[in-house]
Length: 213
Image (cartoon, rainbow, N blue to C red; front, top):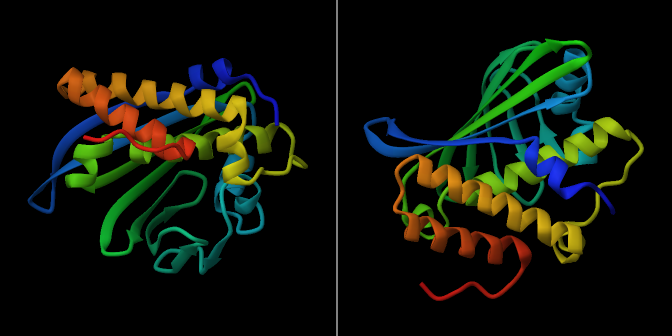
């Protein structure tokens, strides 16, 4: 699979904020990107159970307000908000860890639409080790897959290990991780700690041996 790594990395907006959630310290990792498509098509691509696997992963369950869903081999949860062609939110439950995902779409005019996703989680040792890239790089690969799907609907999503082993895949993962390092520093993280977390994140997504902490 060939794609313009620099173009796709540059299309992303990344930000990190530290806050409280339910009285506990938390982080919010936010991604946003504009796509050359209509609002209706972007909404359908991100909510249609038949299209989601083409760029993300298979999803089962009831994709409606109050419904429960399960991403194959990943998290599940409940859909807690849904406004057609505008916004949806859900809990993201992986093992014993509960976090929250908020997704918004908007029409930008001139045949473009915008997707913004915020993933909020309580701070933990996982955050100390990997920083915002743990969620950020994973979601960013999904945003990339969505871009390729929207541009070429018949495009076949590659195996994750195949992607991580490819030259473009490694370059994308490293570039995304670097982007999240910068976003983390901008949010107030110590630069050395942010760099160490970025190295761990890059190693994890690339299938390499992580560095000792």
